[in-house]
Length: 120
Image 1 (cartoon, one colour):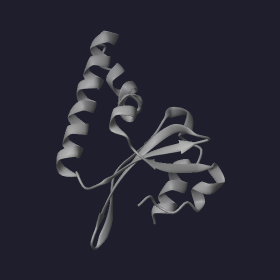
Image 2 (spheres, helix red, strand yellow):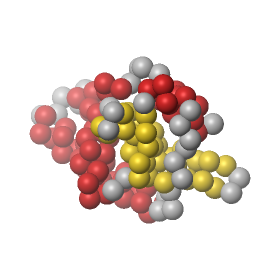
Image 3 (cartoon, rainbow, N blue to C red):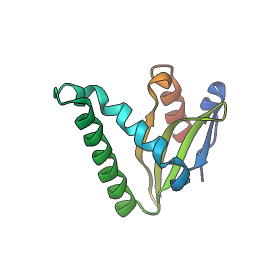
Image 4 (cartoon, rainbow, N blue to C red):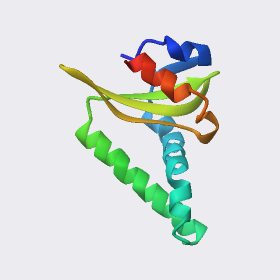
């Protein structure tokens, strides 16, 4: 069940279940956006950097699918557009945040903090 929208409401944030076939390209680009600056420091050609980011996302996605199959895989939306992801697992005694990430244009605006407040 998606977290209740309280603090995120001021940002007009909504959560919806991830549809793998539809959302995987977005999630792959989102992942790359969180690591692109780091990988650029290698000095590798851009094509190699992008291939590496793609491979790393595939490895992460496979790991999450294997180890957190029962998790909620949510896409964070604002004004009907995907801006991030939130992966949660509700254990009997705790809520486990597996991953939370936002597109660069949505970072540094308090959205992530509002999402965390909703989860808390």
